[in-house]
Length: 50
Image 1: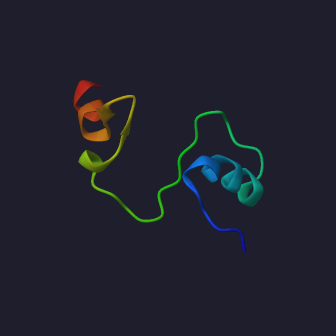
Image 2: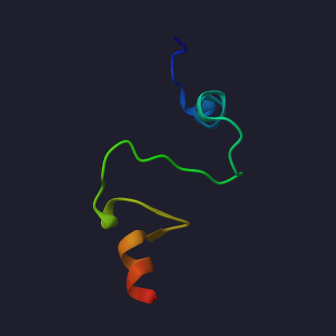
């Protein structure tokens, strides 16, 4: 088993799940929409803007 380090998270995901798009994320458990997002915008705020 490989040890996880911040610099190789994307490569570890690719090795495990196969080819991924350049921007990919994995949630290991359900998270509140204020707890994550992309490019500085939380998912809650993204949903409000729709």
